[in-house]
Image 1: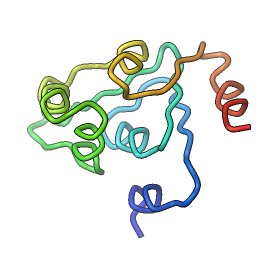
Image 2: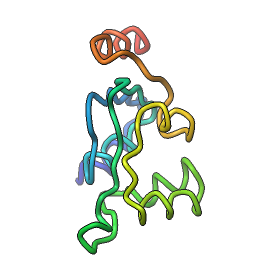
Image 3: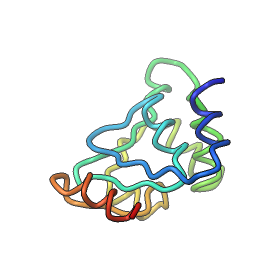
Length: 111
């Protein structure tokens, strides 16, 4: 079974700790998580349009549900590098933590 589908169907919530950049399919993996915490220097990037492709691995489905169709379309077409603070503002992540404390913050949240 494909990884993204397995993540979506998992009965327990997944907390994604995004440390650094999550681009392309990596962004899709991050967005497939139920909850997301990002390092303050982290970012999401849908760069597919830069190479003439449509986002894959579920990105269009997740983005539209998190930020709405119009905003998701804009983010995907413009291939904007979305920093952690902007991700928090848009609802693409739930928390932002200092990079050095990301794993500990994610573990504490999970506990």
